[in-house]
Length: 119
Image: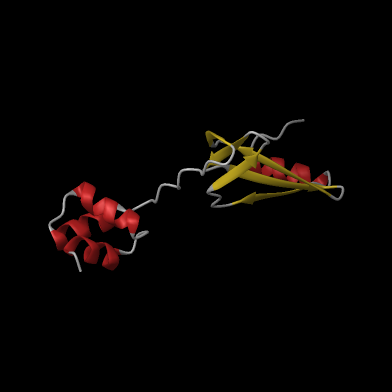
């Protein structure tokens, strides 16, 4: 007997004594090995709790493999298009320059405008 939708599956697992929880908004998971690190970006993470044990299922992620000791590249900052256009209008900067300033300021519009105006 297989569940045909996620809600039914969750209900079936609960009847079997398994709690299921999804970790929302996970940005990355790191697996550190002896000689390398595996960085999984934007993963979907499910947590299963059963019999006093906790199991994590990580799926649908973008993988970056790195040598041990080297830092991971920073996560790309998601900048809304409206913010980029606003900074462009206020400063006369190009799309690329406005976006770059917003990334450097971690999305702070005022700081990005001040950076571009040289204040």
